[in-house]
Length: 134
Image 1 (cartoon, rainbow, N blue to C red):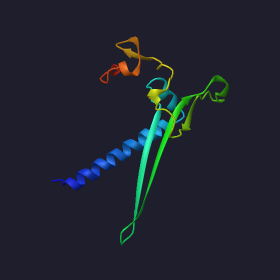
Image 2: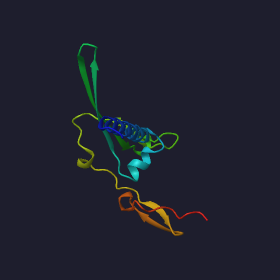
Image 3: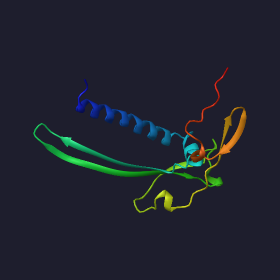
């Protein structure tokens, strides 16, 4: 039988991996446009706390708070590869993404039973799956 300490450790390991994958997707130049344009993801707000301990006691604690945003570049700043979404380290005084204006999400086209439908990511049901290949 698993004890409570093991469950807590497993849960923390699980969330560490989820956070790592979310951060990787956010930083990925090929995915950030999709996240911003179709899913409406605009910021990652991270707080990291590291406690340094010696054999005799606590040495100190370091805490950082960073907010990284995806923003859409105007046409004259689009890169040679067509990259139009930049990552920006936000100052603490910058408004939250919901307090600022952003372009409306671009509708996704999904294939359902051989036909196409258009919807924003918020409207696509989570149980929608492409039809199975025969």
